[in-house]
Image 1: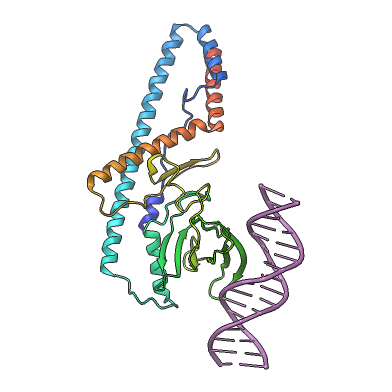
Image 2 (image 1 turned 45 degrees about the horizontal axis):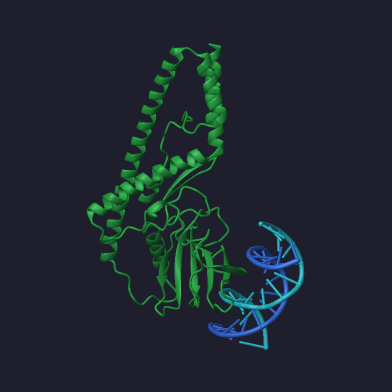
Length: 307
DNA sequence: CGTATTTGACCCGCGC
DNA sequence: GCGCGGGTCAAATACG
């Protein structure tokens, strides 16, 4: 599948700690004392190193920008192809209760290709963008959510509060099915069943029954579109960086089909800008990263004073 | 200690 | 009536 190719987010970047990205008081002190000791040659040397560093960061920035552009283009191409496909094979209105194996596979594939989520991380709050499929009655509907195969929690974050009241292994699917009730309002009759797809273990199928008799709870940490509120201007993109494994995630699902070319390019720029901004701010906020930078600088200063 | 989750038991509808 | 399978209950347990 082509979207797998898109998932390869290995940037092959030079991830050597950036210098002087965010000076801590200790670092400042060390640099100042070194400057006091050092001669003007040291300052020149340092200036050269800084310029070199700046060039390197600019090159990385350029590389990231190019990658992002390629990803956006690929996404648009995929979306166009999906549109063509759905126009070619419109889904029949009479969906029988018991689906054929082929139609189930098609729906799952469609859900994935539709951009349910593109995630390279196991982060629980990562891009879980459901695709909904309403029943002909309008009382039950299905949602496909892409998650990590290793994630056995069967939690689908849709903005509502759910209480799990049962779990069962059904005959047709070895994965357990979890039963939830809406716990936000005691009188709310809505229930949902969540089960991994038998065809694709990374896809979770949530079946909702009933209609909420209350408004959607205020979004705090849970949200059906977890990325929507995290970035300025609701740009559908988020990044996360942990000390052990830096990850980058993109949720490119909220494109309006009728958007003009200019809006698309503006969105691209916005997306690019916010992604870079977010990555930078995440890096500067990360205490481990700060510590690594401080260690690298002090190491370099020590070796220079020894030489 | 209150709340959420787990899990075995139980209930109920359906087909034979 | 019986067995099977899906759905629900509720006591036990875990967790914050």
